[in-house]
Amino acid sequence: MIRKIIEINEEKCNGCGLCAKACHENAIGMVNGKAKLLRDDYCDGLGDCLPTCPTGAITFVEREAAAYDEAAVEANKRKKNRQWPIQIQLTPVNAPYFDGADLLIAADCTAFAYANFAKEIQKGKITLIGCPKLDPVDYSEKLTAILEQNDVKSVTIIRMEVPCCGGIQNAAVTAMKKSGKFIPWQVLTVSVEGEVL
Image (cartoon, rainbow, N blue to C red; front, side, top):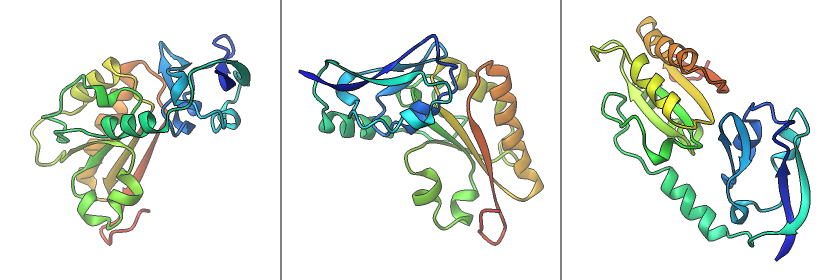
């Protein structure tokens, strides 16, 4: 069928990943440092990605394309968000749920200290947890391997305000640097009173 769908100009794409993050259908992914339309049937043609592109690499075109398949999009979201285990030491380095994922690296106390953790922080993210004080390991090597071997869209680090939680933040930042990839990231800090600072 002929329909409106996005087109990405690879020459204009700077690899920032903002469009992939804005695409709620997971139709856009980062491949070799460039945004790519992964499946025509995942693109709803509404263009949530357009205003996020700082270089104007995304436009609409009308062309032969598979019809938008909402059921397939929803099934893909459920599949991508299904993961086990979540402990950093136990999770595999390469798993399908990491590709195109918004990764959440959490100090394990944060899920218990912040009451809306699952609804506000974890929702839609692939989650890895650990305790830098109790686990006798440097997470940076494992996290580096995960970032190097998978197409992670973004990283959110959540930690408690206590000094020992700095270890999880340091490991994640070190891993992002060692991976050699530009991945949008942020750090959230939870107070001992259970509020995001």
